[in-house]
Image (cartoon, rainbow, N blue to C red; front, side, top):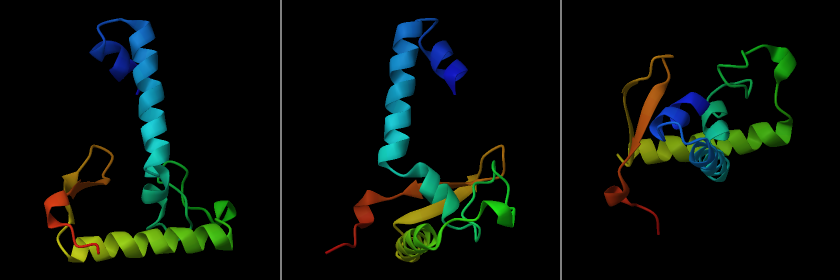
Amino acid sequence: MPLRHYRAEKGNLKEAIRKIKCTLKWREDFQVEDIKRCFDKYGTTADEGSSSSSTSSPETRKQLDQLAAAIEYENETGKIYSRGYDKQGRAILYLTPGKENSN
């Protein structure tokens, strides 16, 4: 990720660092790691592996299960769909905000 930002800013290190920090903040705010972990029964990411020695606590597993249920519901309503995979074989999720179904 750092090299991508550095190249995008054409060598401007200060701006690249600022963008990396913004990206990391966004990933934290939108719980990207939790989204990656919620469908793994062990609560690990593909990068961490799926050994039972790195299982999540029961409370964390409950939160991840709730997130997975919410994503599955949104997928059933057509708000979220998967269209293809990235180079590492992970599904790419697309969101369709126009199909909002929340009350």
